[in-house]
Length: 356
Image (cartoon, rainbow, N blue to C red; front, side):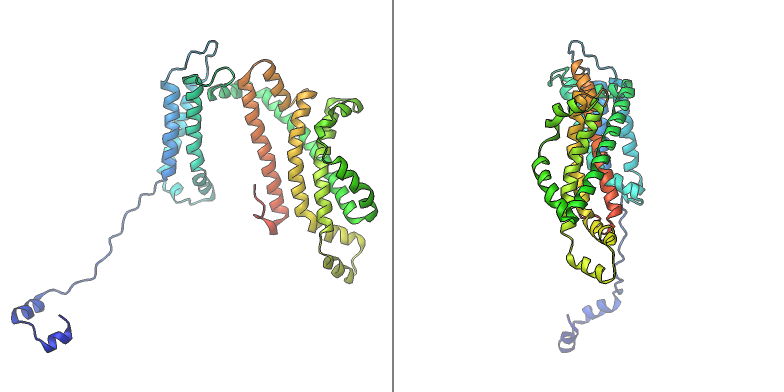
């Protein structure tokens, strides 16, 4: 009953007595809820890797003629160890709260750790355990582990030679493409004579020039260098030229008003403004360089990952072939990531605009 109602219609005596003796209510104090600082996705990843380890160790391999996958036990033990590490990390509060950038990155990769464990388990099940995918063409992950353990020296040498060939070819092609792009972007005479040549010859795949280059160059190694450089130079030249000619003319006018020389206009105005396009050209040139590198190594170069692929295919050693393909994918992805890291440092004002 409200105060106005009490004033107009007084309550009965027994109600007033009970109201007078009732203790005043105290405000409710919220009880803090205890939070469990666990990394749920990490627990799922630990379960996935635990399942992979148990599948590898407890389920016998399918009889497939000659195939007796030798590193089965070691692979299963490594999977169980990975599951144990992930379980410990999942129960560590610092990981759940991502207190450091490294732990934050670990939390971010959690779904991929789950997918990796599940994917490897399905791969092992479809090949070694059930032979649903026929051997020896489809090798289990344990076979790849065997290749990395027993043939790491040859794989490492091949990867080093491929990276060396790629670095020399893309370095020469990138410098030539950049210089030609700035030249035809700045000089009308150069643009008149060189730009049509680039428009005609640039789209030709570099691998189509292999027979001619094998005739003119003394070795397959120098042929590969030339073709990689050619494949890199074309997109770098075109995009550098495009970046130079698209610079706002007011920049040049302001610089000339302040007394800037011709060299200042090129190196301090045109080139910095064209750098975003230059990096796009390098990205496109690397894609062409990867293709040319593998083809050149398959056809003539005596070492490298492309040569390793051909060698493994010739001996019907399919696990070696898959191991080389996986290593190639990781290396090329690392090269692209390195290029974008350099781009982020050089073009700090555009960091995050183009991501990889």
